[in-house]
Length: 314
Image (tube, rainbow, N blue to C red):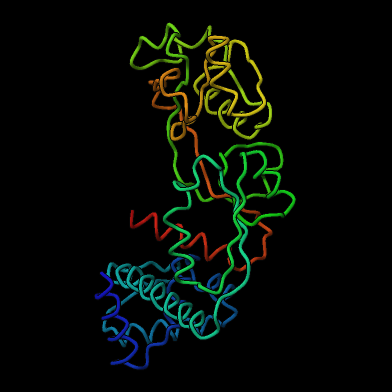
């Protein structure tokens, strides 16, 4: 596909020579706005100029791109195909110019990342090496957090990006997210708990159970409770504990359960603690890279872009 895009770029911009990148951008914008008036207004050009540029492209390509009548303008079949190719060409061109600019000018600065201490390798292991390879002059500072600590650090602008559970927690409206994974939930319990005899559990099985929640992690609690509420489940009663490290002791002492997102466990209690999946397809928790919408650090979009590329290849 890349070879085909580059071929089109060569044919249109090199062999034909008269076609301009700006004309392609105008044609893409026309698809967005749907008529000459809105497109010209948003591009700060005149309607006659826009019409002339599209006519020149039609002449260059030898096909009719738009069907015009007195009341409306619509894309021809060829016009839609050209629009799709133009989008790919422009994306390739913009990526190329960005990489050349970064190569010539160098990218430097500091990027402060907040990490959940129990999923550092999972969330950042493949991304940071790729990012530092591409941007060797960038200094990355790492901070290990519980989810609520990462949220607070984002709110106080002490870090640029942090992995946290996505939720509508008060204050989160200032954040933007790139979702890493949306997964189910499971239950952590003592191996002596009666429910441990089952291979999988339903929310109906859990309706009378005592649930442990973390006093110092309102972000995770809020995210988990939101997901459970969507399925019509509310914990029967709750025991609050200080942090995740105390959960295994409470599970054994109280015979309570701990409902959590899949993907992490507490080490060191293999013979005393077990986990069971919750059989509920609609029960989902989303973990995301979060950053403030008003963050002006230019390294943030570069890092998120690297995340997308690495995850796309995975």
